[in-house]
Image 1 (cartoon, rainbow over the protein chains, first blue to last red):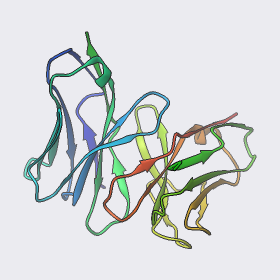
Image 2 (tube, rainbow over the protein chains, first blue to last red):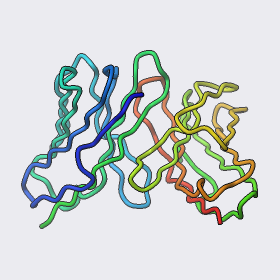
Image 3 (spheres, chains in turn purple, green):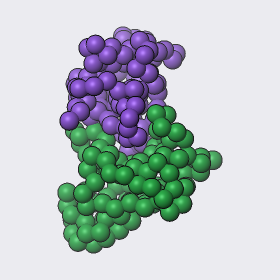
Image 4 (cartoon, rainbow over the protein chains, first blue to last red):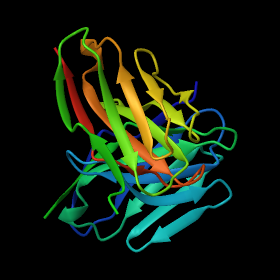
Length: 112
Length: 112
């Protein structure tokens, strides 16, 4: 069965540095890969979507890459701030499917 | 525009009791989803619906039933609650397949 793995449960970085989070999957590549942010006690909030035929997407300080050969997506937050501290989730959807599956998430802490 | 609203937000049940979680969206979205979130497990898909009157099973459907009698509502039922169903439940909707998910704020269920 398809597995989605986010590289680490927790990541601590210093303010101003770039945070890089990893999402790896097994078997076949999804049609779409998305990243969400979740704050404690809240529902996830959509950040970015990247399609199978796209290599990179950017939005302000956020960047997502998608490598179907490595079966991996990287999520970058540049010039990180304490307000970026949250759990980040990757989610995959497939062309022949209507559901969306999530990784377990990575908890990011940005220290001042 | 309320988005996705879940009721109730908190509930405590005894083993064997039944209950229904209600999800309502006012965005005229076609697709709706129910997830559960447990520590270290991420979001796991329970059931989903691609339109009024339709439902489908996700990763962990056992012990749950759903109904989508109206386009704006998606109900999740527990017929005989078990302690293993203690979790935070999230409802989400999207306007079309492969879009971004809009989540509710979650319903925290404890089964004693």
